[in-house]
Length: 143
Image (cartoon, rainbow, N blue to C red):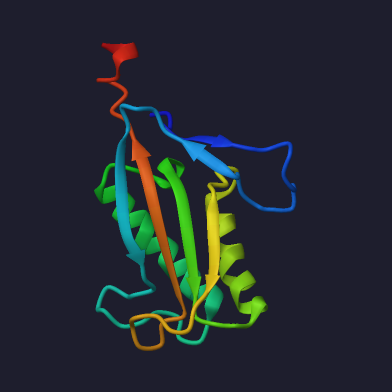
C-alpha cells in the first residue's frame, strides 16, 4: 500500500539537514499519534543501559511494533521528535544516526532535543512520532 505521506523538500533552505523540512497527508488520511517510544524490553526493564545508539534502536523497535498494531509502517510516519537525555551533542548525534538510518529515504521532518531526564530509570532516548494512513481501497480515487 502506498504511503499517504508526501515529504516536502525546500530549495530555499539549507540542504545540511538530514530530513525533509515539511510533510503533508491528504484530507482523507487518519492520523496516528504514537506515545513516545521508549527503550524497554518486553519485561519492562530498560534496554541498552548507558548506550545512546542501542537505546535509539530499541525505541525504533518499539515504534515499529506500535505502528504495526495501528496498521502502519515507518513509511507512514509524518514527523518525529527524538529526545536524548544529554547535553553532549555527540550523544544526540549517536541517537539521531540510528533514527535517521532506520527511516532511510523516508526522511521525515524531525526535531532532535537534548533534555534533562526521561521517565524510566536509566532511560537515555525516547522517540515520538505521528503517522498518517489511508485505506487506499476506500479512498475516493478507488471507490
